[in-house]
Length: 230
Image 1 (cartoon, rainbow, N blue to C red):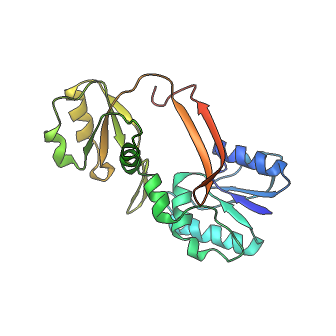
Image 2 (cartoon, helix red, strand yellow; image 1 turned 180 degrees about the vertical axis):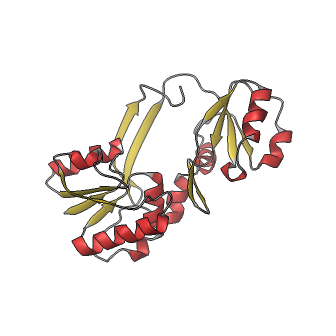
């Protein structure tokens, strides 16, 4: 099968290219520049450059659709948040012969929302950190007195769609009340909601599952060697 992999500089993309390449599939790697990490793999049969999905989202989508149509790509696998969301939202533009093995746009958007995922986990009796949600800068004056420091500042979304493209958010810490207020005041309104969470000490464990209509068909887990931020 001819499989198109986006975000060639992503280490996950390289792993995907190697795995599917070993199975004998024809792999095409694309990114906003070349060479990229995955494009120089021996399993990369072809490569091309697309417009920056962050600053030129529609041009990116048009470029992907055009390549798929002209080269008869069987499967498109976006790897990063932005490329996945953009292709998912425009999946109706894909030719009938090309498969996009992801859930619908609403489901993907919910999975990318940390606040939504945390509330769902809590509803299923999965332990979550103590959390206080700030929906906007107007609520900074309403910070609770019982926050424990250092407190974690976690935007609900890692990537936020704004008028001129996408904004990348990041997790941070505040060591005390003054530090917290100062950090929140510097945030843009579109970065909210922001979750204020207790800091959990200990190793970070991740688990990944590949599901087909709710049926788990593959799992993988890892223990983080490093945390960002540390």
